Length: 111
Image (cartoon, rainbow, N blue to C red; front, top):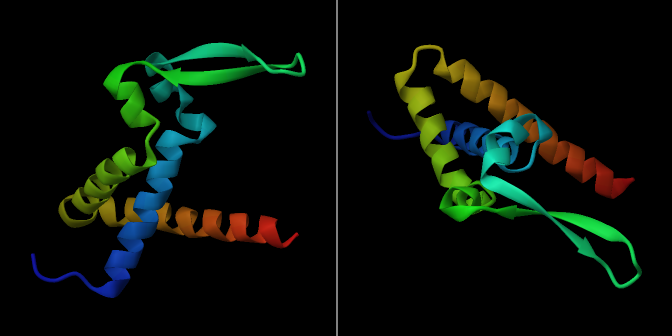
């Protein structure tokens, strides 16, 4: 394996960003996080109640941390890109979705 191009770095960066968001935040991956969290109901000063998701143990802490999951996402994407024959396409799809989510957040702020 030689040097990495700027395009590959950008592609892997966007894919890692999207995979991290997918694992830490998105509803579709709640099944993965759920066993490592418990719900705490907190009553606010105005009488309203809020539900907080509290991590259980080090796995829950890790799954709630963008920095932690980001490192693992980068490793997964790197291995997919360089060592799995169809991995390039998975990384490309994640990168496109990552770029789309950045554009979406940006457009929300404009409107």
